[in-house]
Length: 110
Length: 168
Image (cartoon, helix red, strand yellow):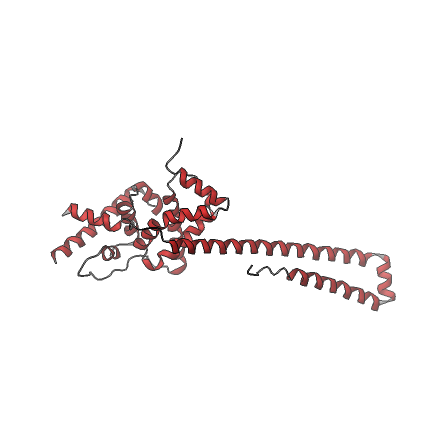
């Protein structure tokens, strides 16, 4: 009885004898390919954000330097409209910069 | 000198270098025992999802496989951690205590369903997959003595069911 039980148990619990499941292997390969693509996109997104932050910091630093220069202070007090137009132009440059980097489409599927 | 795990180590190193064909060979080789173990120990409904998670983690951690343990042991350990992670997220109750009614024609699934999850896992690994007690104890995070008594208890329960069904 014991031997028969042991045989039954071992035979039943052993992995089934079969060929590899090609569909499972294919689904694993597809999932790995997807994960790899997502990883690449994440890296691109982070790199894009870092470059945008660097660009923003450079523009801010430039504006600070400009605003402290005697010529700019004089212009702001003498012709505030022109000074404001300059600020708006700088803001337009920032918007243009960010919208152009947005065209990289970090979540594009290919 | 070549070791018993050298072939898998080489495939794992190629996988770590980004060779997905090498990793597909490892998946081909080990999906059968891994999915069989998971289906027996945690149930067929979750087995394939956990196996996929485990293979994905094995792909990401391929560089960490050093060939000291068998690849199947390393992979099953990853799968077991995936299972525990899922349990923590899904439900706080003690796993694997569900009991099904005895079927008139007793199958091994009926027997396993009446064991706790750790008993099932220990029994399947040691009796069905040829793992040593210490390998299984490492996987299940149990002292060796506890593992041995868990296997013995599980076998004893199964034998009782087997003999009871035989009498009916």
